[in-house]
Image (cartoon, rainbow, N blue to C red; front, side):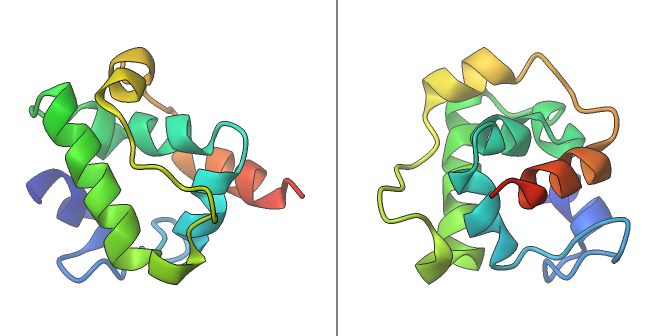
Length: 105
């Protein structure tokens, strides 16, 4: 909670435009090529002091909580293996990477 709310606020509304709100765009992002890795590599996630299994559960919860019906039809929860694979890279410009992901058709 501490690592996410520092940027996205306690209610998930963020600090637009620099820090986006947790909203239906999460469903779009997770369905794009590289989107799952992006969510794992956001600094607050990748650098949080929780283990890979817990981070996978937190990210999956976040997606269900905020994206809900906007998740892709074939959505599967974030796995511990994915977190282990992608976590070592921390994004230096998450806003730019987010914009790039959302522009993919």
